[in-house]
Amino acid sequence: MYRRIAALLMAAALCAVAAACGPARQGNESSQEPSQQEPVKPDASQPGQTDDLLELECLGGLRYGQTEDEVEELLGEPADRAEPEYWESDGLTHTQWSYEGAELSFAEGLLERASVTAPFAGETQAGIAVGDGAEEVREAYGGWIDEEASTEERIVAGDVYGGLIFTLEGGSVVRITLGVTAE
Image (cartoon, rainbow, N blue to C red):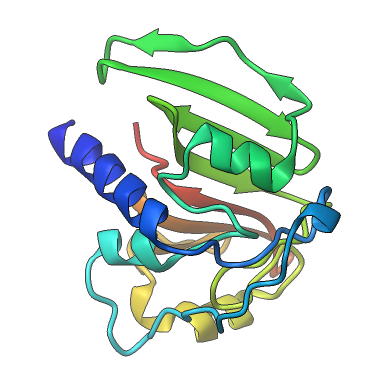
């Protein structure tokens, strides 16, 4: 639990100093300015720690640890915003937001998990989007892939405690989840 809180605080601090990784290709593009920086692609030859992947990774402008205000500025008003709920299991207050093609989970006001499907068109830092093939994912995230947790239906980059999960149907990505997926 303390590791998760520390990671959330670290991610929030990094987000405050780092520029957004580019606009989402959904919804409010007109309020977005294109990123002037080349995205940092995860280096498959240097997988490092899962926390490193979370610090590097971005999904259509969404970053682990972003504040609710930053997400709302990026994507606009959510279609649905659940009431905050206190979880005894981790001692944190959680909130769920929904957009067309995106389900977001916050803990203490910081983005903990983003799960996207079509029509969300944002990409990961390595350029993977919903609709791409499993081989493209494996090529882009090779050294990060947790083979023990991966199956024919999903590819896990990092691990379920922090990273990316690519859900597959017929060899194509139908869902991308960024962040913490294990409870």
